[in-house]
Each structure stands twice: as C-alpha cells, then as structure tokens.
Image 1 (cartoon, rainbow, N blue to C red):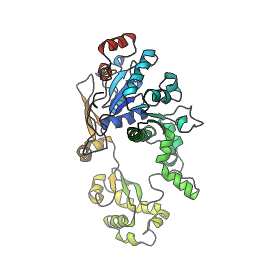
Image 2 (image 1 turned 45 degrees about the vertical axis):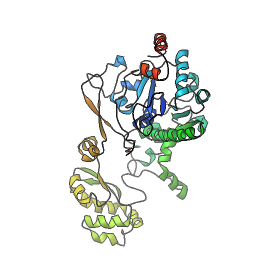
Image 3 (image 1 turned 135 degrees about the horizontal axis):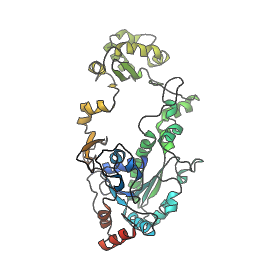
Length: 412
C-alpha cells in the first residue's frame, strides 16, 4: 500500500468507507482530517447525498454524479471509487481491498451488510485484524439486540428517543424543540471515530480486530448524561430547561439590545465578579441570592437582575464589559462567525474549490488542533469514482484487470 495521501496522526491507516448521509461520512471525515487514507466506496452513479444542495448554477452536472454542498462539506480529504456490490466481481474485489485495509465503516440498516456479503464475520475471515464499525439508529445485535433494531432512524429520531429533545425548549409547554444541526448524526459519528481508533490501537497491539457497534439513540442518551444521573439520584423526571441550567444560576442566555448573550456563573467567585461589573456588588453577599442554591430558588429574580444590565446594551458593548472577566459570549449566527477574528485565527473557515466552477466555497474546518501532526481540510471532496484507477493500482491490481473490471461494470 502507498502511504496515506496526507501526513497526520493517522497517516498510514486505511479506512474503507461504505457510508452515506451524515453520521457515517462525518465519522470518516474526522479520520481523513487527521491523515487517514479514507476510500469512499460509492455505488455506481455515486452517493445520493451528492444531489442534496445547496448547489451552484455552474457546478458539476447531476448526471455526472452531482456535487452539492452537503456532500462537499463532509467528504473532504477522501478519495472515491465506485463498486457494484450487486456484481459478484464487485464483491470479490471489495474483499481484496479489505485484505489490505485497517478498518471498514458502514451505516446500513440491520441485515443489509449480510445480504451484500460485507458483514463483519465474512470480512473478519478475509482480514482477522480488521476493525469493523457500524452506525445504526438502534445499534446492532452484536452489541445488544434492541426491539427496535429493524426500525430506520435519522437525526430527529435519535434526538427524540435519545432524550435531548425532551430537555430542550421552552420551560413550560410548547412544541418539542429539535437541536438545529444534526446532532443525532454528528454525535454518534464522533463516538464512531473514537471507537474505530480505540479498536485500531488494540488491533495493532494484538493482531485481533473487532466489531464496533454504535447506536445513534444510545449516543444521544450518553450525551444527555446529566438527565440520567438526575433521574437516577432523585427519582425525578427532568424536563425542558429553557435557556437556563437546572443546577447552576445564572447560567444560560440573556437578552441584549441587539440579540442574546450567554453567561455562565458556576461558582461564587464569578458571581462576585459579575455583580461588581453590573454595578450591583452588594448582590454578592445578599442573604437571599449570595449562594448558588439560593439563586436557583430565586432564578426568575436573578435573571431579571442580570437582564436589567444586559438588555439596554448591545452584544458588542457587553463583550467590552464582560468579556474576559466572566464566562461570556454573544449568541452568534454564521454571519457573525465569518466576521469574528477568532474563527480566522483558529483556521476554522476553510476554502475549497467547488468542482465545475471557478469559485472557492467555505466549509467548517476541524476543531482538533494538533501541534505535531496538524490535521484539517487539505483537499475538496472527490468526484464520483475520481480515484478508481489510482486506488486499484495502489492495491496491486494491474491495468488489464482494471480494464476488465470497468468493462464488466463491476467498477466505475
């Protein structure tokens, strides 16, 4: 095998990526950002998420596979090959790749991998050191057979049953509030990337691979650990929290003249600083609200006292007064992030050329900053089957066989 395309902490790690939509591709994107050679194996015609927008008018035509922004953002740093798993030749070829790979990641519905001959048990016979990761809505039978294992699931299902929606939204009544970005996919993706690297360390030490089972609903529940320990400790059923914290006060969002700001006061030290900054130092030792437990009992009053100061002032004015003194931040949207020097200094807004156009577009970079092996966006997402010949050559397949595989339709 050739070395990884990019240097990085995972340089030399070869991952065969069978995933689509968001959870699986986000996980393999995290690996590719850190230098793993991630080979995106698409069906002939390409991953359907290539067709999801937004699109540019002059971009790659849809009949060439498409290249929407959704696909471009989470498939950067990867290479693409198209293999027809309905073909016996295609399945056999995939097994040849597996023999030389470190890991496979997929997010099929339960039973699909078995029907395709790509299940863990089959591939482990080909490569006993293989790490095999699956991301499913309710997990896989290998990690514990859920009664809902056959149910399809996407982000809102994971958010709902994982419990994050149940503690998010208005404090009384109202409709359930979904978290904006697809955390029902993205959080499981992070667990999947962590699980893959953990299993890979074990495989390299022992020569023995294993199955890594990630349930989307489980991942969200684990992320809502506070609600679980509250229920486990008190027997009470935590509900929606609104814009404030159930255990700390003041700790949440407060109105400003031109939007909202966040403040987090986790202890009496910061409460004393905040009260001084807002011109009410006597509140630090007020017998009714001087301690956190007391402030929780009088939260509405505390919020009103804080907003007496924040509401007449803009976010910028408040940043000048509170920023760097107490935990503080304005509530941002994308325009604010594009303008704030923090995100430029942290290289969080990456530019990549959009295929078929002369335009560079902005995508979010990795937040994982490593001093010795820097990761991040180094290359745009691939075109459909862009690297088929190169990948097959790296795996030791000669030009005559590549031509035969193309002629049969096993690859594209």
